[in-house]
Image 1 (tube, rainbow, N blue to C red):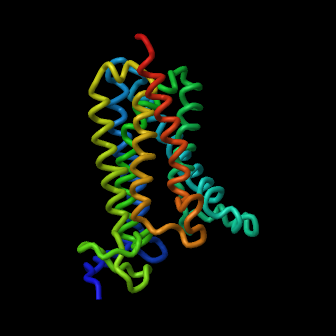
Image 2: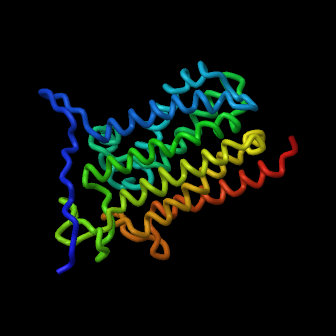
Image 3: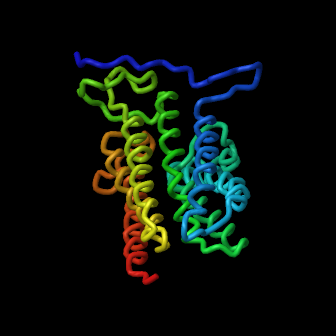
Length: 265
């Protein structure tokens, strides 16, 4: 019998009053947006200044819509297209769960482009400052996944393996925590170090490229320990959907970094 650490059975619902419930997962989204908003107000004012703090305030609504609409649409298209073809109305049932980071990323990119175009802002330079705060939400979201006991890892005999309530009797990697560390803490630290350099800030695309490539690498590594979605399983060459979707991010990120470095200021 393999040793396993007991799963810390945290109630996914923080507060419940009658029919109303406040869930940790919803709080992760809210806290990520609020903390990211406060930090982005500081980052956009660093030289060279790309926007005002007031414009960041206005952007919060845009980015929130981009996250929710893009994340849900991405999940529908990338992970459950066959199901929603037969029941398309259920694509609107966001309360049932199902969000895709890659879809949410596309939603945020579109929101950045539309907002910057409307306000006469260099959208790549603006996106550079915005991406620096995204890992905050990623970290909190993965921690919420852990609390919910969902998106668990593959069966393992590591000393810190856990038996998840919905994952069967076998101990598994707590891959949500791995991903919170890689996609959240590590990526945030990398972007904060890069964002301290005025040379980097003055070359639009480097920070955005570092985020895209960094997230792609972190996601591919994290997926090595994560159990793939049951209805998808392993795909091309044994890769998961999350890994396949991350490859274009790395390629685009590398191109943006090279493009930014070649720019003469």
